[in-house]
Length: 180
Image (cartoon, rainbow, N blue to C red; front, side, top):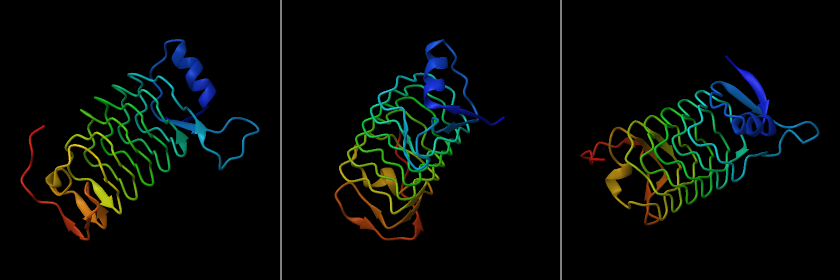
């Protein structure tokens, strides 16, 4: 089920105790230009269900999404700078052109994500597999392990590694898996 909701409505309903927002399409508030970001900066949305949600251009900078279920969510061009997304579910999420600079993603399921052109600079990561990493940027991310990215059948093409070097690819990462 897809239903449209503004950021203000989402925050109000969340504050009233609602947690299930699966399948929503986050839309711009009345009178705000359509190409503007949707403001959820600093929002506390712990344990929220946003499975399959359409969150394109959402500004989630500094937001607390611990335990959130974002399975299959569409986060293209969203901002998650400094967001806390620990122990969450981003399985099969579309993070294309997403900015996750300094995001805390420890314990989060990032398997099967599409991270084309995504920025993970100085982010705290957890191992992931079967991801699409086309021109993704991992400079300064931790843990700074080469086989965190070049493993588990991740598709790698022109991906910037922790130290600034570029894995040109294209190839599927097949290095030994690392334990979580």
